[in-house]
Length: 288
Image (cartoon, rainbow, N blue to C red; front, side):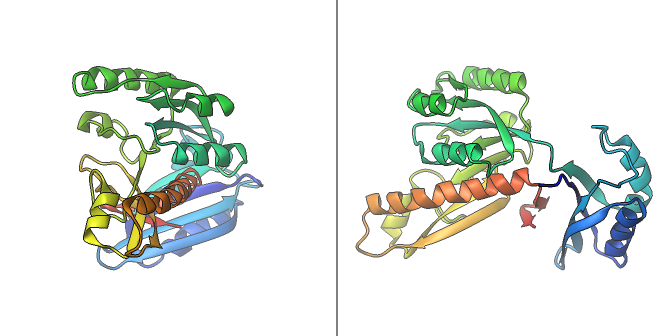
């Protein structure tokens, strides 16, 4: 695919914002490929994603600090009080996966990565169990076991933090990592930790959601991928999906059906994150 630049913008909703952004891209030689916007009436916020071809763009985008782009775009941003970020599709983000024993989400991510569906690099898999070592070996991804229990949680998190610092990821993915991370750990990576929860949030938070759903007699079960915050299973939701269940289904049937959802929902969320399609506002997201 032709490399593109992606401008993500959020600002108070007012007249002229779309025109100003479009005119800026046009005046500097860019060709808009996709443009999506959303005005949130409740918050009075405007959000936009503009993807453009930078081939003839007369502003230097090679500088990682984007000093030249910022200099030219700042007058527009200041006029409309914009918060903005510029990304490039050619940049492959680095993703570290954390996983426990369940392998279905891990396998799905690794397969989609190898097949080219996920535009990212995976420098490391971290687990608190050795069970998935053969899978990592098959996909030739380094795998490190950091055992974690009640008595060594701080030491284990420090070890994980050291591994993360060494590998410099852009974001982390909890692919059924069955440990609750400390607030200090979570706050190091705001909006950069993606989790999969095995229920249709906000229903059935916490542990054993399929058992909770079975006891409640629900007719639909779901899976939710969200950004991790200090509050358990309460971060901004990126993607969800559901499947119908019946009174004949056992807890094991719910778990089996749910796992199919979990891996698909997580992979979608990861793909949209790597493609810079997710904008956050408050505890919500817009996915363009």
